Amino acid sequence: MKRAIISVSDKTGIVDLAREFVSLGIELVSTGGTASLLAKEGVPVTEASQITGFPECLDGRVKTLHPKIHGGILAIRDNKEHMEKIKELGIEPIDYIIINLYPFKETIMKPNIDFETCIENIDIGGPSMLRAAAKNHHDVTVITDPSDYKVVIDEIKEHGKTTSKTRFNLAKKVFEHTAAYDTLIANYLYTQSEDKELPAKLTFTYEKISEMRYGENPHQKATFYRNSLPVEGGLTSATQLGGKELSYNNIADTDACIALLKEFDQPTVVAVKHANPCGVGSDESIFKAWEKAYYADPISIFGGIVAANREVDASTAREMAKIFLEVIVAPSYSDEAIEILTAKKNLRVLTLPTVGIKVPSTEIEMKIIIGGILVQDRDNDLYEKESWKVVTDIAPLDSQTEDLLFGMKVVKHVKSNAIVLVKNKQTVGIGPGQPNRITSTDIAIRNAKENADGAILASDAFFPFSDCVIAASNAGISAIIQPGGSVRDGDSIAECNKQKIPMIFTGMRHFKH
Image (tube, rainbow, N blue to C red; front, side, top):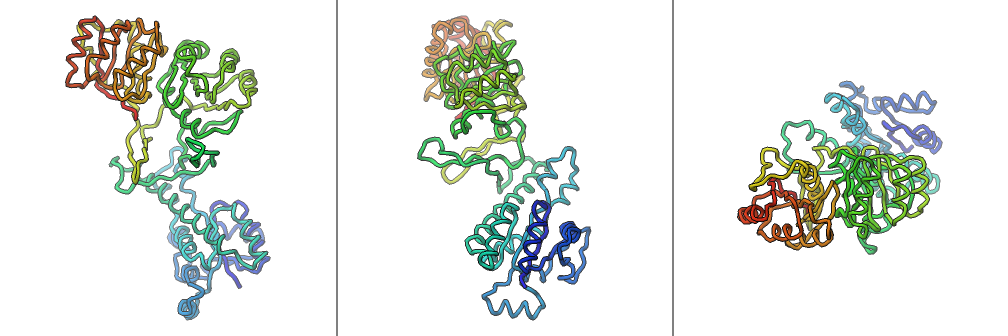
């Protein structure tokens, strides 16, 4: 008689599976709550302790860690010595392992959960049996996902056993599952440690959301994953109300849009194109903020991504609907706004109630390189208060302070070298990603046109020469904010003093490559 071990925390479909096994002449062995459930449902089941001859002990910590279990799983059926040995030891082969693990992820996500409870939800026997069965998948069928129950039953009914291809795929799935499980444990223990240095062995676990039509370009394959532990305020938590499936580039650009939006508390709208902001506006209402973001660059916003940190009302939605946008994301929409926006079948309309929540300090950034990965803390800070200082003979006016801060919030999200011009909490010119700073400055001024006059200029890094100050002066820039730190800072300061332009050093660089 074939034998199966069933021990699951997720009991979805397990009774039906057990009944199918019994009808196929497969003996069931189980433990704890699963055994109790099957017995209650009238399914014949043998307790694991009857097989091992040893009772469960240590509050259930030890149930299946026994040679009569693992010998029955690991014995190679085509190996004569293996089969003679287990017969000599009184071990029966085990042909099916159906196990899913203690709910460690669900446990650590509970509010105010204590450390000891989390530790008790680290499964030991389950992963051991799963790994043993997956290693011996030539002979043993191992299932850890209830969605695989049907294919296993169907194949047993058709062939008398599962196919080698199915056993291989299930084994592969097991090692993915146990690797992710161990990664969650390791990362949880990292968060509980006083030592916050990144570990010598860095592992991550993500869950597939969907296969994508293609990647950054049509010839590239792509898949969308989310962090196994949900991150509040991120795009993976958004709900799509209407429009086409999000593309790879949509997701990347919307993430950039949301990241910049999180800098602002006042009603704000951010427009992004190819991961760079093209228009940002703040005001007393989301409608006025939208107008500022749109008129900041009405050409570049075409085909762009828009994010708002307040509910989108009908009047704002009507204006948004007048142009071609790829994605709109907001915490909520009025009923009329939803009707207006979802009427555009290609417009992706997303709701994300936590869109304004700041990025957690535990979040990191990763950049994949050939053969490796770069990891860093997120650039959550804006400036160091103790380093903020006026370095020119004249100081900015109090009325310029909000625009100076606004400019720094935007410029840290623009690809380096980055220059941003701001007037009345509206970007009027953005110069992104040039190999030298003066070209970025020229682009920002050219885009701003007459709006450069009286605007403030924000730079993500220091001026290596005074040429940016000269260009700013010629355009009518009224104040400059930059990190400082160049060996030639004196040249820029002297030029600002000559042109009577106040300049602030923040002491904090914001490169974004």
